[in-house]
Image 1 (cartoon, rainbow, N blue to C red):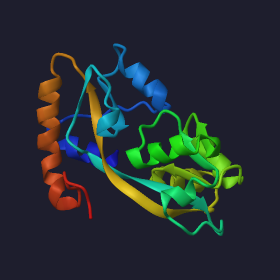
Image 2 (cartoon, rainbow, N blue to C red; image 1 turned 135 degrees about the vertical axis):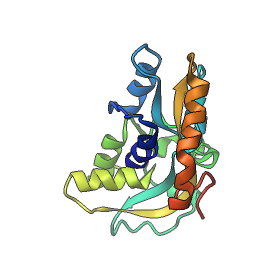
Image 3 (tube, rainbow, N blue to C red; image 1 turned 180 degrees about the vertical axis):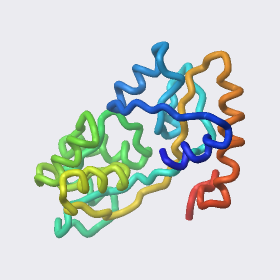
Length: 192
């Protein structure tokens, strides 16, 4: 969020953000008080919204408790254990396919907070989410008890702008604002 604020500052735009649970943020963005929601993977941009250029990148990873004993990063092996997913996320097709093959091993939580809690308490063996979010949850709880077993993919994070008068202008302005960050470590293409 800080990078986005810095990118918009030279344009005289002050970013105002309300933090809401993911599903509620998407619903609230449909109302009249918001111009969109962030962060979203491009495939999470709802009808009636338009995706911006990438403003950051996230990873989708298999997270485990430290010393969990899980060693294989193969999804087919991971899904032989209890795996937590956030029910409102659109997961990569490889994850969705494994979840369909072994639904009895899948625990779908409403949000990352409960996902972290279940993982840290040993109620699930692995969680699939953004590792930055999971590490943040761990730090907030004062623990350092989770680690990445395997990064599955890196995905762009976009702003989902509601299709309103002025949206195309906002999209162009954001693209222009993000351009200088390319040289500062933010690429509009996936990181290696």
